[in-house]
Structure formats: C-alpha cells, structure tokens
Length: 225
Ligand code: DX5
Ligand code: ZN
Image (cartoon, rainbow, N blue to C red; front, top):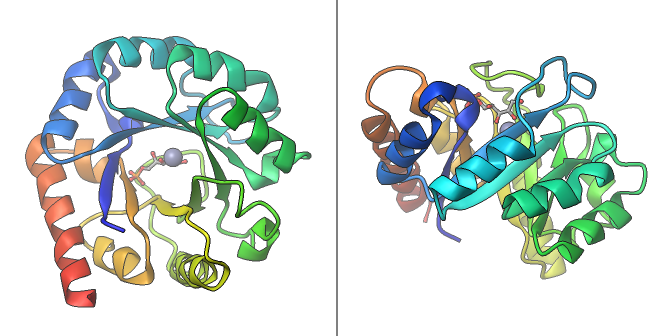
C-alpha cells in the first residue's frame, strides 16, 4: 500500500481555510484530515458540520473526519450530509462500536476506528473486518503540535501483522507528532496514511512543507522495501 499524506486542517489558518487546504493538496496531500472536538471527549472545541460543508464546496478532496466526540452516533448523519468522505470514531467513545461503524457505512461514508495511546490493539479484534481504516493516535487527542509517543510504533506494526494474518484490507493511519523526524519510523512500522498538522501548516511554505514530508515518507518506504 502506498503512503499518503493527510494534512490536518486543525493547524491551518481558519480565516484562509480553503486556500491553506488547497496549498497542502498541491504540495502532495491526497486527503484532508478534519479534527472534530466537542470539549467533552477531549478538552478542546474545534468545528462541526457547517465547516465540513464549506470545505466540501471548496474542494472535491477526500474529507477524513476524525470525531473526538461523545455520542458520535448522533452526528454521523449531519457529517455525512455535510460532505464527509471518511468518518472515524474512537473505540473509547463508542458503547456500541459495531453498530456505530455500520451506521457510518449505511450513510455512504468509509468507517474508521481510532485508538488512544493507552488503548490496546486487541480491543479492535471484533471490528477490524468492518473498517476501512484504523487510526492509531500517537499523541493524546485534543491538541496539535504535541510530542510523538514512541509506543505507537509497536501498535502500528501489530496492526500490519494482524492484517496479513487475517487477510484483511483495512488501511493504517497515524495521527499526532508526525514530522520530518518521526515520519520514517511510522512508515517503516507499517503506517500508510500520515496525518500531519503542524509539520504542514505550522511555519514556512505549506506546499514545500507537504512536499518535503511526503518525499521523506516515500524514501522511507523505498529503504524499507
Ligand atoms: C489531535 C488531532 C491531530 C492533530 C495533529 O487530537 O487528532 O489530528 O491535529 O497535529 P500535529 O501533526 O501537529 O500533531
Ligand atoms: Zn486527528
């Protein structure tokens, strides 16, 4: 599976969101990661369906909506109607995870499941055949520009191994602290969807930042191949 860059718009300038997002896509991003926070599941508040609807009008790109919210079932339909392409929910927030993932698929979106740094991979054993992607948090969710948690690498590697052993096809996404110093290690562990906020939008030229990160990721795959 080829590596793809998913710029996280949380670090973008919301006053120039469409232009920032377009620059990140032109730099090599192939989907946009959209962080939704409700101030309950995580100690921060970001955006809702209206921002997704505006983004959808501005770009045909895949919108990878990462729901860091309680009661995600309530919001699957509004995000799907707003134009979300992928919707991922936290294992830690879903009492009926199987039902929630099926609900996302029923609304025509690709379902993803997310695990926090402290949550073991085996909690997903009974839903890995249901999901399009698994998102491994490499920071505790709620904020951008945090330090990468190295323990995430063994979880990514475990998911890559299980995928082969069980003949499954879910994609492996990593989120949090992915930058030029950590991208090679996550790719070598088996991640192919690389979320990056601060490393793309933080400082300097957005296009150049995205291109440099994707280049570093791809050269890590070549070295690993
Ligand atoms: C954190 C979010 C991440 C964050 C990544 O809770 O889920 O997507 O925006 O930002 P960086 O790449 O700056 O760590
Ligand atoms: Zn995220």
